[in-house]
Image 1 (cartoon, rainbow, N blue to C red):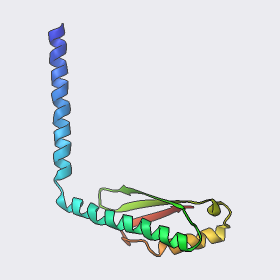
Image 2 (image 1 turned 45 degrees about the horizontal axis):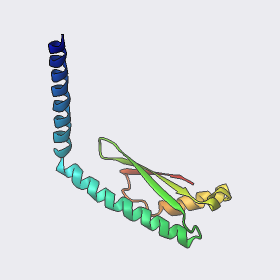
Image 3 (image 1 turned 30 degrees about the vertical axis):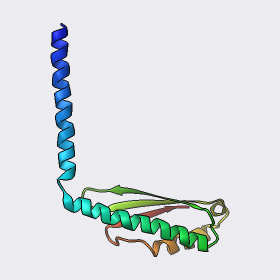
Image 4 (image 1 turned 135 degrees about the vertical axis):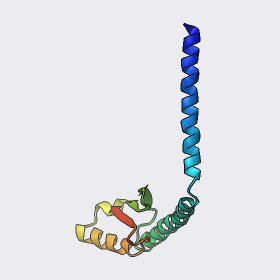
Length: 119
């Protein structure tokens, strides 16, 4: 009985290792995608820093800016920008709309990137 368990366990372990190796090889197999990811990573970091600077200039000192991303198979990206500051809670809908429009002026990747703002 224990010999059979050992055999099943060994086969299961080999299958898991094969899937892990295959996944690693496939993720390394597209150097163009890796370059694209590096390029967008730089744009994302620059966008967040510029957003913080802009908000600081608008009186939102020490606000939190968080950007999350979803990358689709075709290379298009969807970003969600969340901005946290106590003053945002007291803003009118019109002021928030103006702030969203101002932030959208610095968006990158026209046509391939979609931005959403949570204020």
